[in-house]
Image 1 (cartoon, rainbow, N blue to C red):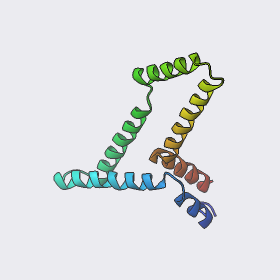
Image 2 (tube, one colour; image 1 turned 120 degrees about the horizontal axis):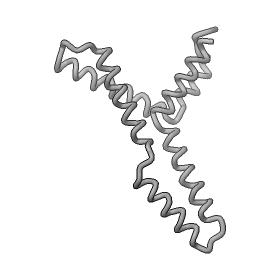
Image 3 (cartoon, helix red, strand yellow; image 1 turned 135 degrees about the vertical axis):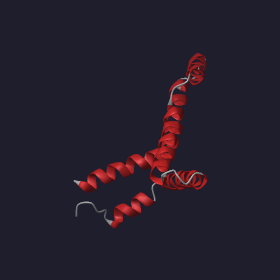
Image 4 (tube, rainbow, N blue to C red; image 1 turned 90 degrees about the vertical axis):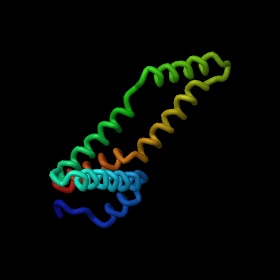
Length: 125
């Protein structure tokens, strides 16, 4: 059944935590592109959707970059927790930060995009 998903896979995908964010993002991308075309009818809707999507994707990638301020904050937290006489505090703090980051990544529209891409590639095989 190449190119098709089973209903169980569709239900699982629909229940994926980041799917709501992905749907909102897609609606926003299309709305912005349609507004641009309404303002200038010489524009091509598909091309505008591509541009808005690309800009949105670049903004998301930019937000993942490590900044000097973020790095300084992480070093300060690690240094401070390392000075306190509480065993494994630094490890616990690092673990919590990692879990928070994982949680936000799983709610990101990008994680849904990557999941859909993977499902699409598997369905084509």
